Image (cartoon, rainbow, N blue to C red; front, side, top):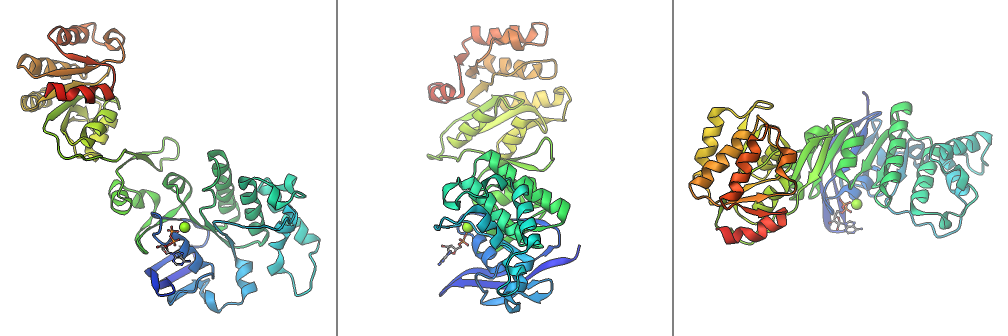
Length: 418
Ligand code: ADP
Ligand code: MG
């Protein structure tokens, strides 16, 4: 893939304040590139430097091997279109007036639009679904419609590369997908190179071939979404705890936000959670957030609760995926349970594969460990062991297990058991 843009060690500043510090990267022709990073990390500034709005104080921007800042304005406009973050148009131009303005780089001086220019404008309006708005005033349409009109104008330029700054941030989810799918279609079918700033990491991951992750005016990493969006990089750059899953259809990374730890000083107490299949994740998050020393198990590696535990740095006893709990891991679990203060049983189904966890809880209870049960559903509806689990479960209750109906109640009552 030939390069269309090459950025070499650029620095940008506003007056005396330096904002971008030694950035280098290149973009292949036909690539869909996303620029991501926290607020103030320099995404918009970078886009401005690529679109000739803000000349770098150092370094070069090459557009097809030519210095962008030495090229003729019209020549640049034929190759590159820009969709800025905010488009303030206060004069009530009609939508079709705005869109046809995109043709100006293709017109000679004093030359009027010809049939071809109108045809290009019409096609851009059809693609963006704005043709029916043609005679409306730009000041009298919705934000989402205006954004589509600005994109239609950009397409009317017939550029090879289009730069966008958070093009969908003010749109609802349906219009976000509509615009991004349109860009994707232009990228795939017409080979249009796209560079866009994204606020939403999940949208960036879904649509981009490569991502530039910015941190404090510098590039933190560049690569495919699966390379740039990791638990570690998001923690490092955004300071946020997340889980990364595979999108069930696209296979791209999908980011799940975890609530922030509201550390109120460490609490004394070791809590073991018996869970699985995601039933324990909310509780694990709450307990870790409260500063308890948390453990869980036995869980199959790869289970949602297992993943959550890993991200939260919780001790987890794990078993090979899909295998029933082995005697070895069962013993490890019993040993761990001898050392905890409270055991909490999440509202999970029991089958032959995880019945041992219930046995381990019973053993802990008989050596006087307090047991708390989160019960959202009758055990009979989630016992797949011919009643064996039900027996053990009801026995826990008879012997004084503390029953609560949800995670919040569990957290509230926990202090009473410690
Ligand atoms: P982002 O788009 O990632 O939120 P920006 O590129 O807008 O970040 O801003 C990067 C830094 O530059 C911020 O610290 C911001 O305050 C500063 N900045 C942005 N625009 C200007 C400006 N016009 N004048 C002075 N500083 C600016
Ligand atoms: Mg910005």
